Image (cartoon, rainbow, N blue to C red; front, side, top):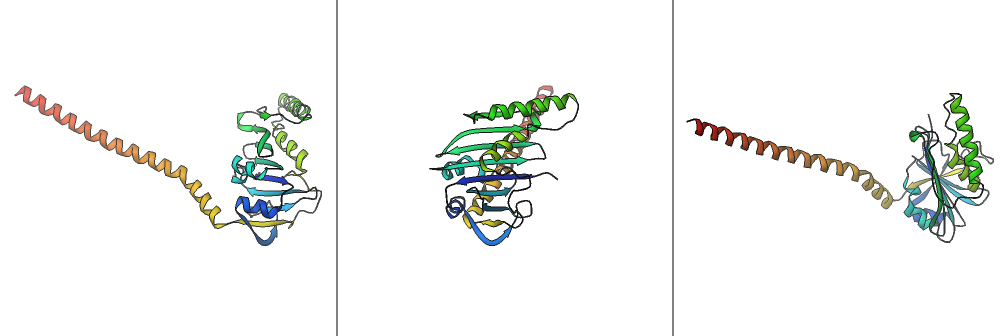
Length: 232
């Protein structure tokens, strides 16, 4: 079973302000991020406040949220979907995305998408992982090493990686959070919209098929009557 997670980390901003911006509230309970909890958060010893959500495309990693959270500070977003070997990392500063790097395993083990001005040591990290990938591909190992690229960049900034043993106590150290009423409604609507669109398309297709059948029936009936009249 692989991880499917989204996480963001924000520096120099109170957790209460981050919660309010994202529509989150504390439950008063604690747990971990690899369990059943939808979203958890904590302050790391290095000062970053990290939020970890189940699923690789949680709204906390969307551009609108990060642009707001990174005003006058820094924010990092990371998405992981190990089932298809997808990973991404983006660094935001002063309300704008400074750079990002993404790997899509479904597009091949050497797939890399990058934007912005990446850190100076990025090139050497990428080169090392790509060389390892090519070497093991020749040996038929089948391991996706480039998947680690965004995760290495994220850890370099925040000091956190989801699949490594933490340097500080982990179990039960995260606050369990929940969505407020407005956020639950908003997410429900966003989840429904694609299905509503699909149902609308199917309904339109059905209407067009009925209309086509009616026109075809009328046309065949007219041709039959015209032919009958011509013969008689």
